[in-house]
Image (cartoon, rainbow, N blue to C red):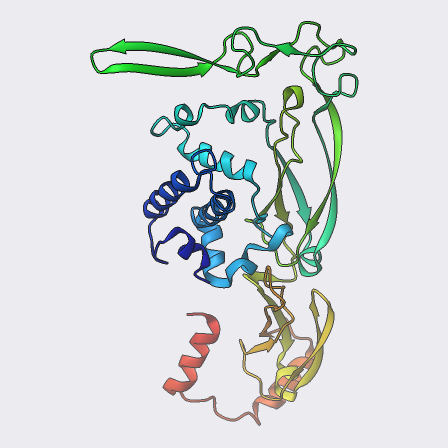
Length: 376
């Protein structure tokens, strides 16, 4: 459970600032552009993966409670997966790119592809409680920029290709040196001629007009695990909008919207069902069927059951996200009192009143249990 904390060398109760500081120190040490050791790249990816989880309060809470299983695996509620080197570098540059001139230390070349990265696409998928109970595959359709088939994403007219920028020599950046009383300073900035791409398109594609992408309808299948809730989302890496001129694609963010089921009240992984019964049913006892997300279940109500009694059906609630266990179905029994009586009912109740005993005295035990059942 402490693997991610151990990787960053921080305590389990470390603050967000402490986690960020520890990660930055380790990232500077193991960054593959600074550390040529064979194991540096793998270490850099490991600590970045740990940082990406612990910096997010929701992911950290799930990890603290369930370990990596709480993050849901590759298709889980938080879209957790092992990061590759490109993702690890992007995460570092996202949070520390402007600190300490990091781009200048390593030349800034890795940012060229990132500047052409496509935008993230956000879609909403509507789910029923039955979908949540079983898990489901959904097909989502959306319009987003996709690679131009005419120029294969290069942006250049078929039969031609982009040429190396003569201003920056293909590096995508220009350096300017300046002297001062403190010595020589070198500033690095994107090339103004090629906008940091290192190449120039002389003859643009007539279909995409040099963008290397056109707007199209995309279809993606999303596997939604059981046990999700409305505050969960899924991240599908590289399924968003394609970047210009063969730039990397953004992510597809799938927001989950779960429709309320009028039969149940959801409390985490537990479901609450209110069961109304007549006085005669609770007095004599009865066997009734109650709904669950998996079909109907029979519940035995014993004679003399009191109002607000709780009957708990173990494992008939919703699955726990990322685990094999399930919550419970909590049946709350309510005694239904008729608002009007027909003459025959009134006669029977009057006859019954002659044989009823005294109501229970207000002993602390009885009323404390009643308050507990009412949630007071």
